[in-house]
Amino acid sequence: MKKTVYLIALILGLQLTNAASAQNVETISLRVPDFAHALVENLAQEYSRTHNGVEFRFISAKELSGATNVLVLTTDEPAVKFARYAVLPITKKGTEADKLTASRRLNAKKLRSLFFKSDDEDEDEQSKAEQKVHIYTGNSQLSASRAYASYFNEDVNGFKGKKVSGDDSYLTAAISRDPLGVTVNYLSNIFDLESRKPGSELAILPLDLDKHGRQVLDAANLDNILNLLEEQQYAEIPVGSVGFSYDTTDRVINDFVSWVLTNATGELHHYGLLTLPQNELTAQLQRIVNKELAQN
Image 1 (cartoon, rainbow, N blue to C red):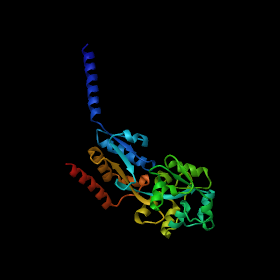
Image 2: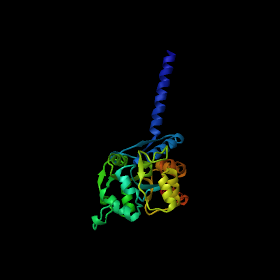
Image 3: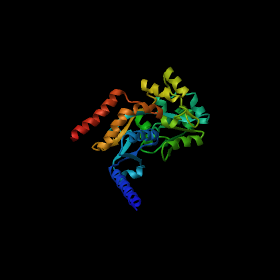
Image 4: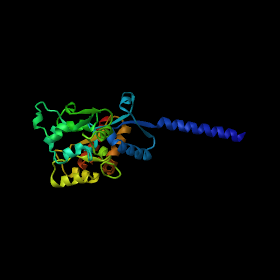
C-alpha cells in the first residue's frame, strides 16, 4: 500500500514538474527560405543545447499571420544581418543550353540581355544563345531570382521565360528536364555541401571575370568560390546580405540573434554563405544593444 501511494505521489510530482517546465518554455517560430534552412536549423539546435527553456519551430508562409515570437530570415535591408549570399547563373552540364553558352564570356550587360526583357530588343542583334535558351525563374518572396533582378536594377516581372512556383529547388528540377533550360540560384542550392561540387550535374555559365576569377569559377569548388567573393567583387555576380527580421522588443529572440552574430561565422562557409566583415558584425550587435538600452 505504501509503495502504491509513493508511486502515485512520484508520478504526480513528475507531472507537476513537467507542467511547470512546459509553462517556462519559450517557443520561437522561424520562417526560413530553403537556401539557408539547413544552416538555421543547425544553429537553432546548437542554441537549444546550451539554452534551456527555448524551443524552435519552423513555419510556412501561410502560418506567419497567426504565429507569435516570429523570426523571419530575409534579404530586406532593415534586417539584422549576419551573413551574405551569392547568386550564379546555371544550366545542366552537357545540354544544348550548356553548349550555346560555353563559348561566351558573359559580362553584366550580356547577363542582363540574356535574362531580362527589353523594350527596344532587336532579335537580329540577339545572340544565338539569347534566342534559343529557356529562362526559368522563381516567384517566391526570397527566391534567388528576386535577388538577381534587384541587383541588376530590374523588376522581377521583367525576366524572360517561365516562372516556377515553390522554393528554388524546383528551378534546378526545371532545367534538369529541359535541355535548353537556364536559371539562377543561390550557391547553397547549386552546390552539394558535402562534395563541395555542383550538384545534379549542374554547370555554372561562363562569366567575364579576370583570369583568377575565371579559373576559380571553372574549377567549381564551393570553398574557393566563397573565398574569392569575400576577397573581390564582380559586377557579374550578385552578392547581398541576409539577416533576421523580428520584433526587437522580444528579449528571447534578441538573445538568440546576438548569439548567432557571435557564433555563426564559423558555420557559414559549410552552408554556402559568405561571412560579413567583422566591422559589420560589430555594428549589427551594437544595433541590438542600442535597442535594448532604449527599452530600459
